[in-house]
Length: 82
Length: 133
Image 1 (cartoon, rainbow over the protein chains, first blue to last red):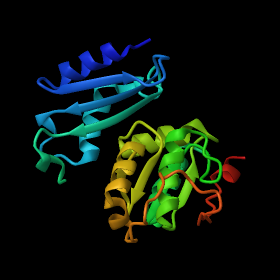
Image 2: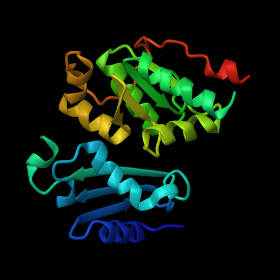
Image 3: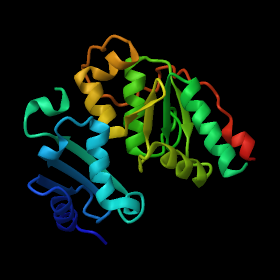
Image 4: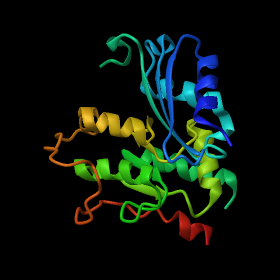
């Protein structure tokens, strides 16, 4: 069963330098919420940003990880067009 | 129904419905909190949309994710393009971007985007369940 800590480490490995917060939203080890700030998100759409996170976990999303809620942000406010 | 037929059906649904939501359950009876939030946002906007329940056959979800490259449900498509899952839909709903995208006025938001049962949901029957029966 994945832990919030494990998810955080894997996101950080995939996106070096990212600021990552992962919460286990139910305490059950299968519903998580990730907040990620990374310069890799610069110039990407939200879809592309979220896909970068989903790609870290592949088939585990929908499997062992039942739900992964994601909030992404580039370090500069301009990154997401907002 | 073969996997190819399901894929074609999904593809047509995306192309033929300007606002197309794939969800667990129905707008009237969402079967998952994330799907409930996404359909609730569309209900709050009062936009006409089609919704398809992915639960009747696991292959619907497999083919949809294969086609979109997006692993989770719900998935919202507008004008044939994937907009996102519930997180993105809610972010865009709250910022007014979603209203902009679908071409409606952002409603006055006194409360959150929980679905209002009285709100009529303009849902075109798709009948995938029937075809699979």
